[in-house]
Amino acid sequence: MSHDTNTIDSRTHEGELNKLGFWIFLTAEFALFGTLFATLLTLQHGGDYAGKMTTELFELPLVLIMTFALLLSSYTCGIAIYYMRKEKQNLMMFWMILTVLLGLVFVGFEIYEFAHYATEGVNPTIGSFWSSFFILLGTHGWHVSVGIVWIICLLIQIATRGLDSYNAPKLFIVSLYWHFLDVVWIFIFTAVYMIGMVYSG
Image 1 (tube, rainbow, N blue to C red):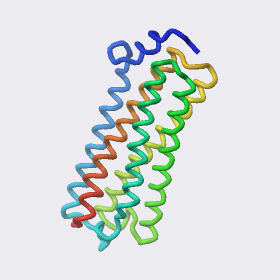
Image 2 (cartoon, helix red, strand yellow; image 1 turned 180 degrees about the horizontal axis):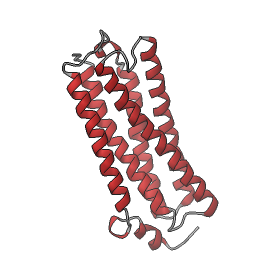
Image 3 (cartoon, helix red, strand yellow; image 1 turned 120 degrees about the vertical axis):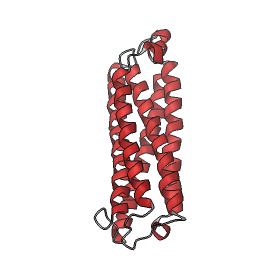
Image 4 (cartoon, rainbow, N blue to C red; image 1 turned 90 degrees about the vertical axis):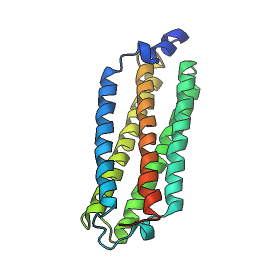
């Protein structure tokens, strides 16, 4: 592991790290989720619910657990980046592994949620609202899963070659990606679940 703190720390700052490709990618992601949100919000007011009301199906405790797990993972990810900049590899690994575990909790509960809806006869084919609902949440869940795999691959690389100025910027970029997914989830929680628990159609 490198002991040049300035090298690792400075390479993770916006002004000294070439993240143009990442920001282009993130802009495309904003456009993607923006389109999905616009579609769902439009269908939320006048779309086909096929008689399956969100006021009856959405379960607040489950959604709160998912929200807590993902937001807590953003916090643990931030701590991991803090220790990365201090070149404390073991502590960074610990907090990033916690981030992965919390991400897995989120994905696990989302799979459970989808399975629960399936047992209630709710799937993407029964109505326009539910189609947009599953596409939005499925897209976000897929992105979280990709983020988990991305982090795991970086942790394996760091465990193999040590924390250095080559992999530290990659870890910083994946942390930005992870925080982006948390922000998207806050919008989903508010616009989809909170509204859906009091209003259908």
